[in-house]
Image (cartoon, rainbow, N blue to C red; front, top):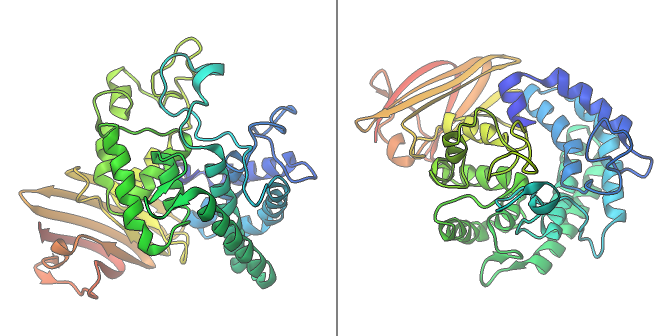
Amino acid sequence: AEQMMLNFRSAAFLSKWCGDLRTAQRPAGQIPCVVPSTGWGYYGLMGPDWSSALINVPWYIYLYTGNRNILEQNYDAIRRNFEFMESMTTDLTLNYGTGDWCAPFDGPGIGVNMGSYKCPTEVSDTGFFYYAAIMLAKMAHILHKPEDEAYYTERAGCIRTVFRSRFFDPVSCTVTGDCQTATAVMLYFGLCEPEERAGLLKRLLEQIDEKDGHLDFGVLGCKMVMQTLGQMGRADVSVAMMEQKTYPSLRNWLDQGATTLWECWNGGGERNGSLNHHMFSDFAAFMHKYIGGLAPDEDAPGFRHIVFRPGVDSGVTSASSRHESVYGTVACAWSLADHVLTLDLQIPTGCTGTLYLPQSLLESLSENGQPLYCDGEVCIHLVSGSYHLMAKK
């Protein structure tokens, strides 16, 4: 949903589909894993992971357009789905989802290996349950529902406590399952304390090293691992995983002649899944946000405030990202050659931006030879306009 909002300006299409999701919802609150549905998918493959579409799609529409109505239209359906999840819990944990579908495997896929992932379903399910509570609290705040905000904040706190006590070992800094996706669940959903983030990142990097720098995740880990690495300043590791020449990687797909995204890391063919599958497309959102360097700010949605985080330390030497927001064109283009960074930014009238760069670059950053204001952090605050910036690396 996020890359669709970035690449295809799909708010109208996805808003219509939100209506389909609501129509498909049963009175008890569950939705099927495919919508529209002929009746299939209500009693299997419809756990909190797949059902998070009910939350994520309206949230990304709001985030990328600032349209609060989409949250109002879907709030009750999301709330009822949360109640259904809660009815399925055992001691505030869940274990009925589809899981980290299509992690790397050998052999045929359909009906055999697509579900052979390493992250325990109860870890990802309970993470998504916590996420649902957090998002309902956020939406309640935006929609001025203070009692609901307090209730879902309290629910989130209880789920977080249970998750940590059941699935997290603070001594070894490991999450049950001890794999890339399990570690990223805790980081991506914010189930760790701030002081634990460095240790969990270290363990995630170790898990990637244990796979000789290869990815080892399915559809859930794709978003969580890649975007967590981007958020924590290690987009270089994400890029290296994508560029691996050997299986599994995006480069490996390309070298096999792929012109589309595939369903399985080991290819398609008879019983091996689709060769035209949208499932792993969140790679594109990662690249826009942490390589191209362009993302909205949830506190000022619709790109009223823009987060610029170009991947100058990612191993990529140039990139650009551009989006037609409701306020006008937002853009970030950069290149790195001979230790000199060239950076062009575009911020629409009435909007603002924050540029995040390594401290070593900020010290020499200038526009037309004049130093720019820096607030002492690794960021610079910018008003609307076009910027041509240069810095020595």
